[in-house]
Length: 217
Ligand SMILES: [Zn+2]
Ligand SMILES: [Zn+2]
Image 1: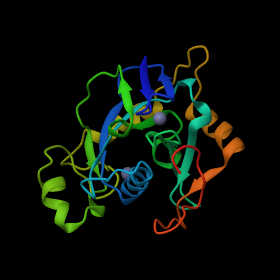
Image 2: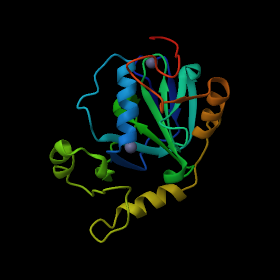
Image 3: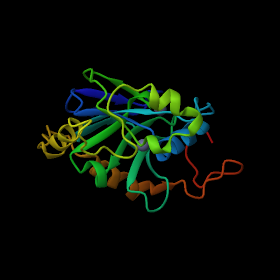
């Protein structure tokens, strides 16, 4: 079992497995934008201002231990298919669901932006979305990275043949749900029914954000 908690400990979710299916460094604008917003809500700086986000991908089988009422789901735009959960107590980022890329069997965790305990070590499978890295950060983020690197999402290439089978295998492996465990989708639907989405599209940090959250506003 892996425990995923927010940084202040009020929210705790357990995953039924401990072994990541794979691990990606994501350099996309969307991850950076939402995590920058969450850092601003925490009154912290997001530094460096653009970074590769280290993500583990686990079997999509979870159980809430506490604090489900503090979880909200964020969309960068109304059409976003990439859904990210943040907590209203301390603006930790816990999970990402991306059905169009990952499919329904995989939950993604930005483990540097929450507190994750009990998962097994896993080498970085690949770095993705280097196309979004600003030129002044390319040397540090891209050129110094040793593993498979992709301008967008990972594709099969002769240079990096091992990445796609790893991901396809994870997408096709049957998920086991111990008693009380569900996929992220059920958690998202419960949350959105009660609290709606947080849409960042019209967000402007010079004035009020588009939503009112409990806690530190
Ligand atoms: Zn918290
Ligand atoms: Zn990303």
